[in-house]
Amino acid sequence: MIGTVIDIDGDYAVIRYDVTGTESHVALAILGDAQIGDKVKFEDFSYELLKQ
Image (cartoon, rainbow, N blue to C red; front, side, top):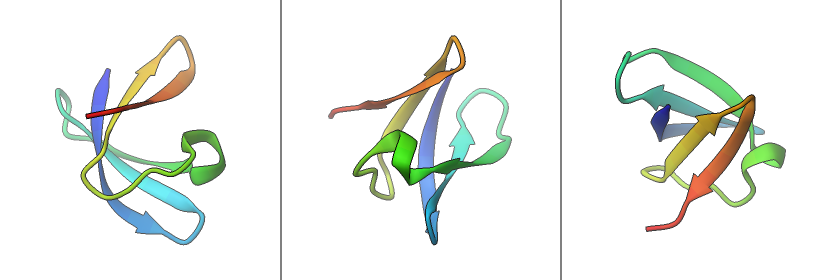
């Protein structure tokens, strides 16, 4: 599932998933240097920051 980082909330990135529109908080420690607007892939219980 692909999502977009829409906000940085302290130590967490707020991600809105493109298909469902739901939002979740993911620790920046998992995503690395994610910035607002970056795309993230969630698959098999892991996150991957997609480089553009």
